[in-house]
Length: 198
Image (tube, rainbow, N blue to C red):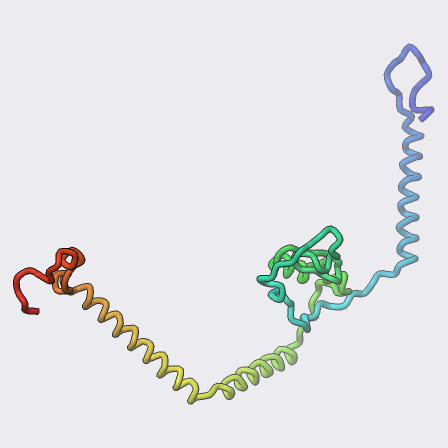
């Protein structure tokens, strides 16, 4: 920066040496280009796998409803929340944990890109056939007699419920006088007024 100012004491304004700064900028650009070339030569670009479906069940409710003591020395995998051993991080709730394991950073740490393999027509047809077979198997497993028992039980419950409702309506519709002696009459020592008919 020695050449940045002119040495004239009478002129107090800055005078920049444009040629020197152009040379410094050019050197910096050349250095950056050289570093980029070295990096490209050292590390060939990685070919990541295409995104695949999960083959395991995500455990979200094993710690549900449990309390746990956490201290300063508790390891991250045993702290409160959901621990991701691939990324070595703790996520506090299930929604954010699902977002994390479906996210770009987690998939990259697993060695996958976020690109999906394009399916062919034959693959789609096979998948439809497989799903159709699964649905048919579920229908076969369905027991007809068991379903009849369930329906009868349901009907009985409905009848009992309707009967109970009718009784409640009748109780509410009856006048209060016909219920018998009131608390006050019992305290006074007689059972009713006048007639003995009911």
